[in-house]
Length: 149
Image (cartoon, rainbow, N blue to C red; front, side):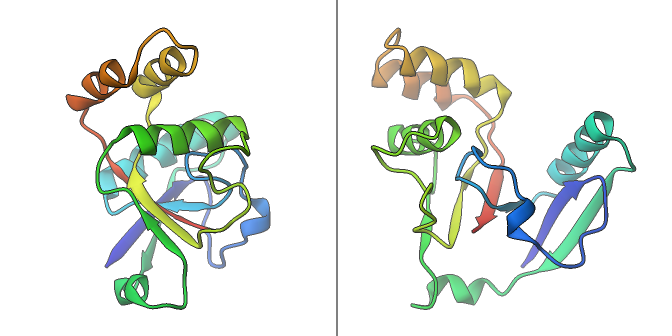
C-alpha cells in the first residue's frame, strides 16, 4: 500500500523523537492513504512554518499489520471509544484509553479534524451526551490516518 505524509520538507528517514506530542493517537509519525489529504496538510504546514509544501510517499507492506511483531490498534469508524481515545491523547490524559505510553506501535483510524474539535469539547465539558456526540459525527466526511509510534 502507498501512504503519504504532507509537510514542508523531504523526509528520507523517519525520526520519532522530533514528532509532536498530543496528537490524535499520541506522539508519532502520521500518514494517510489519501494523497489529496497529504497535499492539503503539506500546504498548511508550509504556510505555518515556511518552506515548500512536500508530500512524502512511502510504500508500506500492510501484511505486517497482521503479524504478532507489532501492537496494532484500529478504529474502523468513528465511535465514542475513538473520540475518547483522541481526547485523552490530545489532552495528555493518562487515566483512560490512550497511547501516551506507546503501548501501540501503529494506530489506524479516522482523522479528528477541526470540525470535530468543538464537538469533542462539548462532549468533554458535559454539554452533550454520547448520543449527541455520535449524531454529530454521523454526517462528517472523515479521512484516514496511520500513526507509527
